[in-house]
Image 1 (cartoon, rainbow, N blue to C red):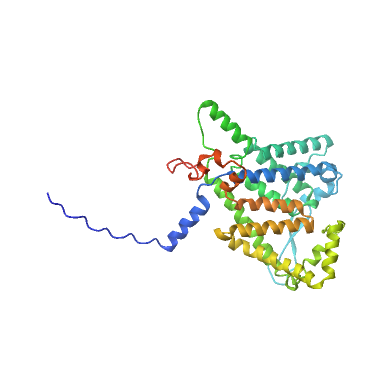
Image 2: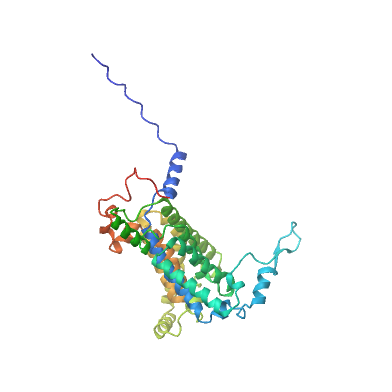
Length: 371
């Protein structure tokens, strides 16, 4: 029987720009991601959190004790009685009180016994160490975040940029599967699977890992964009003299270090070198902070921007003495490093077939998606 050839099918119409945008948005936020980078961030943040709160041990009662810098009565007044003002409804109306107190709480606001204060402090330190090691990570991440919050809400006079960044990162890590890789939890899980004869691919990609990583990346870009554009409001940044206020300020700069002092004297003795160094530093800072949120998404420029950010925060650590803050910003910056690169740097790529050369990232497409 003679059959007629099939009719040529019409070409599918190209997707609309809205469809392409929605698909790109979905891939950006809700595709599966390897949690290895989150594991590295957990180790960095955990070590920094433990170090920061270990330093509270010297003079612990001065920070959170009932007779500390902010004693119990003053802290109680700030929490419950201090007036909060708001704008009136008219142009000429003055500020008027709208509420009393502040919406924060700390266990140290209620515990006044020295023994219990020390015991709670040690408990938080142990939780942060376990979180760093990745043991019982789901629970120790919550305990670490709550522990850090207790000090921020009680010793508010000591809060600085380091504490802000620490709380941001601990919050993200608390909702992230940061214990799925580079952790004792993953080692124990692998050991149990081996004993039971159930080989499980490690680490397992998940939507949650990618989602939290994207949150970190976007948050980093917002911080840089806000910092860079706010600098444009300052006259010293336009005149190129803003760095003078930093490198010659003994409250920040290490003026007591002989080599640093000699470098400053040498630059100041040669006006053109001084202007190049100071004005160049201003331009570099503005270019990195304002350009990073836009250029880092380009694959060809990503490593250039990451290296530029590393150099920027290295300078902040050296010239302003903000080592802890710089390390915390670098921990957030690690979110831009691909998981495969992290594993290669740590020498783990060969152990995971899905990350070996030629292997696909994650399980087969038919596998259920872990959220």
